[in-house]
Length: 491
Image (cartoon, rainbow, N blue to C red; front, side, top):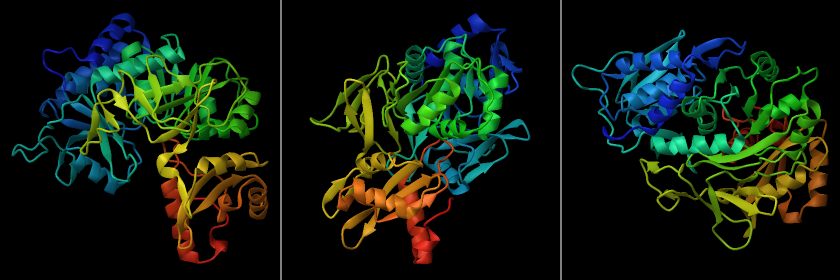
């Protein structure tokens, strides 16, 4: 945590923002009404500092409030109280939440109940609605030497956190604003989760550190989001592919005269989705690639409306990207002032340390920029042959009426693993997909099975999980022992 003699980078940036924009609107409702000025945020933060006073310096404070207008004030208050914020998603299950509270040594959990902030002291085994115990049974202050924690599951299902200093979060904010051209004249539309690294770095820190206002939205219905975009007068929409796909398929969509910048991250944006969106709305979608461990990595800043599947742009300002192996695709090494200090409670210095992060992604570098081709952990071992599922996905996306596809491996007694394709389609039969695969793919790459769905499920962050899809596929096949139970349908 920050030394008492050291000026916290977030608070230093906030001081400049407040001096420049004190009476200006900072947070808007989806109707375009001002919910908070910058001065209001500062006053609220001072009140929250008093409410956090019972918790010792160095305490981890979990914040689980969705896309609430309280978020900027809570960030500022935690840093003023020398507490360590830990953002948590609203839809986290009880078992996972309890595990996180223990693993991250959380001292307090902040929630919104009936419109009010509730700060609950955490005891071993959960949280209860009260202040700290007079008998000292609450979780003691953390010994973590950091200012902020981001939650990540990494390559396993077990939760763990990434440790950051305020200056690293500010560096990421600067890289994003300078690369994407975000200014105080913009209004960010905040529908992606504030608790996720993408939402926090594109919405919360630009408001606090750069004075970029935002619209706070909890709505997840595509038509409602478009209507709110039009009403609020937002100029920047950080979204996810699932939103842009829904917008592209919508009839009688409202006009968006003030929207100037669309950003897509969280998952790969399909070429056909981006093309159709641009045709319907006349707006380019700028793809953005980043990671919780290091913030923004690359971005498509060009005005070109000729999209390419798996393209993620060029290196962001102040970010160095270096291939780790000869030949392509390759893992990459990221270096920037925004890279986190390391993981907690387990350390993986080989992947994250000393201003360097090595993602598990496989990347191809061309004169145009970077292309994501899959993850090291996703490679399927078919009788000794290694296949990248992205190769099969790329071919299936060429088949007419295929909207989305995810390929994953399942255990096979004969070949070690077999590929399975989960495909979202419009009016295409399973047999037609199989025929296309047999025509376009090598025999050993053809999926063992094709699972047709209306839409491939994603979590609140817009991400999909091959591991979770494989588990669901195996659960269904085990329960039915026949294909009829899982050939079609959705979650």
